[in-house]
Amino acid sequence: MKRRDFFRRIAGAVMAATVPETSFGGEATRKDRRPNIILMMADDLGWGDPGYTGNKLIHTPCLDAMAAAGLRFDRFYAAAPVCSPTRGSCLTGRHPYRYGVFHANVGHLPPEEITLAELLKSRGYTTGHFGKWHLGTLTRTEKDSNRGGPRGAKHYSPPWDNGFDDCFSTEAKVPTWNPMRKPGSDEPYGTAYWKADGVKASGHLEGDDSRIIMDRVIPFIRDAVKRSKPFFAVIWFHTPHLPVEAGAEYLKMYPNVEEKKRRYFGCITAMDAQIGRLRRDLRRLGVAHDTMLWFCIDNGPEGTAGRAPGSSGPLRGRKRSLFEGGIRVPGILEWPAKARPGSVTAMPACTGDYLPTILHVLDIHMPDDRPIDGVSLLPLIEGRMSERPHPIAFESAKQLALIDNRHKLITLDRGKTWMLFDLIADPSETRDIAEQHREIVRRMRATLDAWRTSCQDSLAGKDYRRMPQ
Image 1 (tube, rainbow, N blue to C red):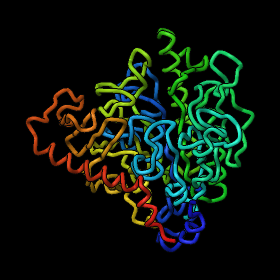
Image 2: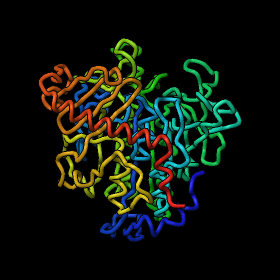
Image 3: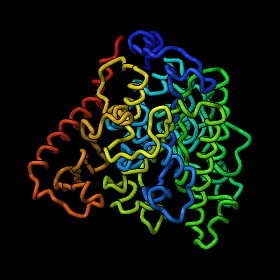
Image 4: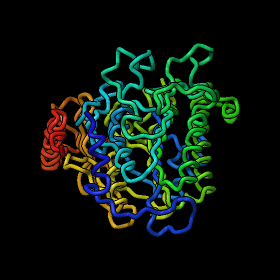
């Protein structure tokens, strides 16, 4: 059982947050204010798809402007090469192999996990989740999406049970245009949007899915500002996950492109427009300066280039692969109060870093000593860090990998054979240098083995025994 009463009791003491209560409804009195926080994520967008990473065909002017206005991560990693595990890492700071979310539609966010939403809610934030959840089912009573209903009742773990006040959430994917209907028909798609009261959303569900999501985000933010409440918004777009569809106004922007690519390009540009809408509204509300606006992707582009038009650019691999194309994703932080415009970093960072970074900014401490895989990026944001203090570890299916500031160790067969790449000299992973650098392989394997043992202890529930009673 989740210790919700415990978190309420210790909100002011054990977490030891020291930032004072202040006003959030304007640009005045910035000095000691807690920042608003927004985590945006696209679904299956490739490294090579946005304009700012080099794409010359897909129009992403708002993402490009966001990258120019903030801190651009040239080595940002999703925690996994598939969506559900990465999403869990965003909220817990922990690798999903610690709590059983091994793949998409596998496991759920356990009640004992401590989420960013719970921690921020305990410090006075209003919290909202909008878009794709994919960390558990949202109903026990009726068929919904991939696992919802009685058949998946044991995996019931909706966002409103994990710290979110306001929700407009789906269990899994929906079409990127007219999300409640099967593409090209009036038949129900079979996946609903659910609100925080566990009731299906109705009305205003036609057209571009990214706009439908943002139509719920904007009022949430405006209400928080009106009430002088700091806000935490998680915006997980479905775009451009299959089934990929786009409206006429976006299709016509790509008149000389074959149909499959037109739909893919169009839905990305539609999502980009909503990101621009959000950025404009933050400025109009007077809160842009003090808002941490993050953007990333859950994994690399779908399938093969023949099946889906997403691009991993010069990187090797795609979704489901621990090669760079499956896990290295576009990453941006726009935060005018702290992040210098036009700054770029090549230091490795990952989705598991969100939680420790945000807790560091707010001087919040975890209520127990469970392992956290991410690191705080605040010193990097402030220009005081250029190298990652410890490597990023990965496991997915039979694949294992470890990435440090320069090298990457990877196996595709659970350790029977190992490859080593110099990601600085060879980001496309074309030259295996394991034989020439056996000592680096030995050292990195030892680190990876220790990490896996720690994950196995976590999966056995040992971390939860540390929770105060």
